[in-house]
Image (cartoon, rainbow, N blue to C red):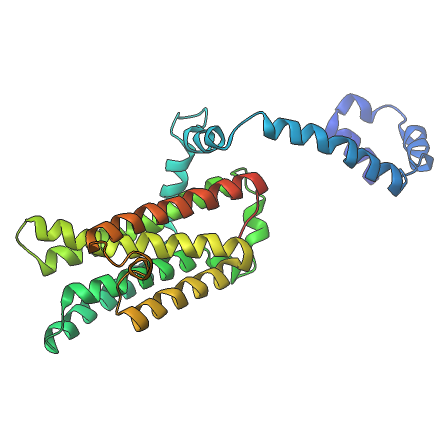
Length: 278
């Protein structure tokens, strides 16, 4: 039995008893002439207004809600939560151990040299956020981002899930460190948490926004350079003091939190519109 007969037999045994060679020979000699490039370009130009009209029909707020509320029919669990679970499972134990050791070692050094442990936490939280963000997008280092692009999740959904993982992981880590510094529950704990949450959100937001132009490596390096400059020039205080010197620290922290959230939201909206990976 030749290969053609074997294929026909696999599809339908009843066809194996008929003479299909004549049909196959005709199919071999039948060639479809590919359309000219001009016709292909014309088709693309004709389709562009259709896609543009579809995009205009849904505002960015609705697009973002669709990303967050989209569900699989099998279990009704939002895709974002499923992606958060899968992205969290991809965090290696070695990375978790490394970040915990870095944080504990830094707090110990701060105590040994009689420095402020809370100031170390405020200084380290943005760097930990950038490190986690870069780690979440390590697929670029292994050249498998195109493979990720073939999954049925949209790039915007993957981006939202990864940002949630980055923020939740660092908030949990820094909250645990805060409880190590201040064991008694008081307003001081809340103030300290706002102190490290503000630069964390702002710097991660800057990293994500600039990564749309420069890639994840360039985005993290740019945000890291901005935070390093802030530590060097103004001792960790917000650059907002240059423009509004009379603002209390608590107000500048709240403004930084809203700026960071705004940058994250704006970047994700751009992502959804362009459907691209970093």
